[in-house]
Image (cartoon, rainbow, N blue to C red):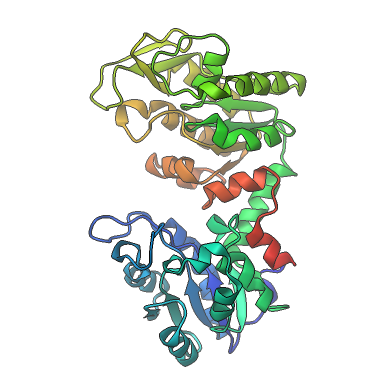
Length: 396
C-alpha cells in the first residue's frame, strides 16, 4: 500500500481528494471540523516536502449546479487557521480560473477548489471531467475515506491519469489499517454493536460479521423488527414489516455460527416522538399499544455493557436510541461509556462513523476509544467485503 511516506513532493503540484463535507449552521459556520482536521497531516507532509497542495472535495448534495449553502468557500478561513498558511480559493473546480490558480501556485501554498458536485459529471464518474481535474496537478493523493465507496470522477476515475504518481494519504491509510485490524486481526472475543433505524441498511454487514464475531449486540430502532419477528408486541415502535423473515434468518444464522446474539430485553417507551413525551420503561416485547420504544432500558444497558467490558475487540456502528433527544440518550451514552471502559482495560475499539462517531464526541469519549472512523457508509461497505472504488483506483 503506497502512502505519502513513500514519496517526496518537492516541487510537485499535488491534487488531494479530501472529504470536507462538514456540517454548517445557518450562518455558514462549521459545527464539526473533524473531517478537515483529519486531512491536515497529509497536507502538511506535502507542504513540508516543498510541494503545493490543490484540494478538491464535495460538500452536501446540490441538486442542480452551484448553491451558496454548499460552497466550499465557507471552509477556507477555518482551513487557514488549522494550517497556518494562506489558502487560495478557485470559484470552480475546472476551467480557466482553476487552471490559472493551479499554475500560479508556489511551493508551500494551498489552493482549495469549489465543490466538485456543482458539476453533475462528478457523481457520474465522467472521464472527460476527471481528465480536466487531473490536468491541474502532477501527482494524485486520495485522502477522503468517506467517499471511497463512490465510483466518482475525483475518487476513482481520476487515478488512471497518474500511473506511478498516486498514493493514499495518512487518513486513508489509517482507515484501512484500523478496518483490517477488526476484519482480519481481531483479538477475541470480538463484539459488534449494531444500532440505527433499519435492519435493511445493515443486513450485508451483519451477514459478513456473523463469520467473524463472538457477540452481536443489536439496539436502536432495528431491534424492534427482531422483537416483532419473535412474536412480541412493540406498539408503535419502528418496524420493517417486510423484514421479519430476514430477522428470523439472522437469529438462526447466529445460532448456527455460534455467535451470541444480544437483543434488548427492556425499552424506554414514549407516547410520542418528542423529548417532552410521557415516558416509561417496559419489557421490549410488551410495549403498550400507541407507545413506541425510543431507547434501550436499564436491564439492557446492564447486559450490553457487561458483554462490551469483557470484549477484546469492539466495532460499534449505530446508536441505541434517539440520542439526539436527551430523554432517550441514556442507552447510547451508556454503551459509549462501556466501550471507553473496555478500551481503558486494553481492548481495541473502532467507532464506525456516522451517528456513532457523533455520539462519542457528544458524550466526551472521542479520545477514550481506539479509533473513530470518518466514513460511515464507506466503512460499512468495507466490512461487507466490497472492494471500494476509491481504494482500488490507487492499488491498480
